[in-house]
Image (cartoon, rainbow, N blue to C red):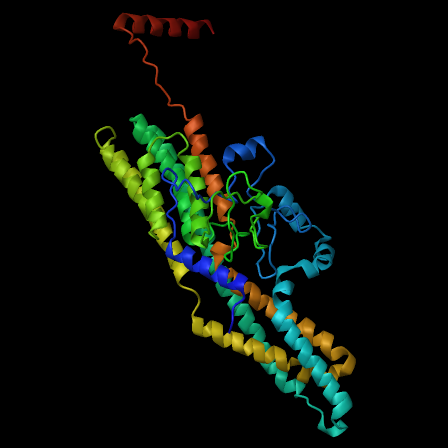
Length: 460
């Protein structure tokens, strides 16, 4: 097989890229080539401008994120009272029917599943009507097929329930992260007397959900980031519009120098941008570089953040009561336990043998469905009835498959921002209560006061 010159050049560039992968660091970055964050928006810019880290689908609702590909699942942001009102609206079914062709299950199943059912139905109808004799039509007993349909329906329902259990469990984990982070922030402000230790601990609490999000999701919940990304950057002052070769993630890509970056490099750049937003004051730079090194080396960044928390707590023994030190460590244990449970869900899917077996049964059932429907539906209704029935059952099973990986569905970025805002609010608003010491009364003054009280009671 001969390669065209352009294809050969691209292959050589990719080989060169793999062999000379650059280490991206916030302070020691190659001056000729630097990966710029393409998706993350600093929190200060979100408040002052119109930029937002979330891209919502205006046609599908303000709480639903925009899907950049038909294979993407439905992702919702946190519900508000307005969202719940729309969710329970009496006209919701009409709205849902209007948006049917934009729905995730239909677009995901359109090809190859529903396309295959359509082709089988069409070929079956053509064969039975134009080729086969009346007594030699290709059909299956509807009564016998009904039993198999019942089993398939139960199988799809079981799959959905099992996956929702994982989804609910992960939501509970992130609720524990949120509660423990708030408790630790309040306890830090109450008990840590050293200002440097207190500042470091609060930054670690902000960095923990960020590191956890990038640990549990390959793209750090930047769902529109493309894994297949090819760009040859231009020199400073060049035309940024000519940078891409038709496969850019976003029109805002900003890269300087001649370089080609891997998917891991771009994810690492997004991680550093979020971390730098936390360590923007230039203090605790050792922690920043420490997390950078662990993340780029493929290590466990959330565990490293927890280790730094415990180092800070252990370093405060001289200024914090041992009882409070133990209380702080127990909160770290809660974070570590929820983190370990999240890793368990991430690394342990439903038994893969069950997934493969149910997938095979779904395929066989959906593609033999037209044979069972043909005797009752005839040549005109077999195709639409088979497609609708397959869509109903396969859609339930497909939703279950998507929910099996909860960290790709849950709005982890919104949870992380909520924890950041909560820690910042505690840090900003906490005011220690100072008990005012009153001048003690001597015995004579106390006696006089008691006499005055008795006299006042007699007058009344």
